[in-house]
Image 1 (cartoon, rainbow, N blue to C red):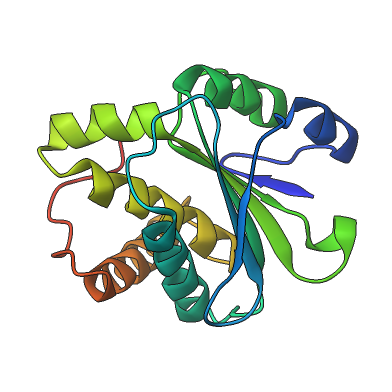
Image 2 (cartoon, rainbow, N blue to C red; image 1 turned 180 degrees about the vertical axis):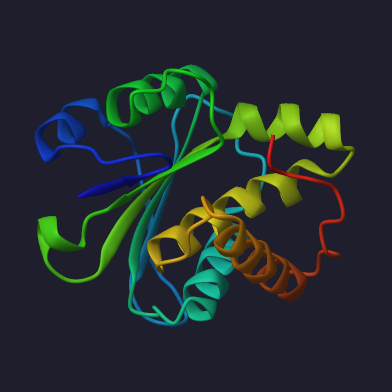
Length: 179
């Protein structure tokens, strides 16, 4: 299993740190199942809209069969996971876990900070729904093989994000998003 962000995680510690959650399960248009859970945070966008964003991102990333579990959590919960899996206990927006090798088939988990999205949306003067869906798109693209550490990779990631967000009805992001 790979935790995306800044490094790798071992399988045993990842299983221990993942929170228990209730899921809304439904097949998506393109293939694999997309589970969605809201753990300790207020629902700020419909599950249908989250599924649409995830489905468009996995199709853009040429992985329509990708099964996903998307969990919206608090800043505190995600910072704790960030520390455990990536040795960086600071707040972050999204962490992905590629579970393909662990359970067979193509699958992954995304943990998204709904609180971080609210803070950043307010600071950037964009609607919360846009920021949350951007985090979902970003995480799914990571699971599809996109990276954003090197400048060329980051440019490719931003272009993919903008393409998917446009299909969701949002204008291209003109503000920097790499702070």
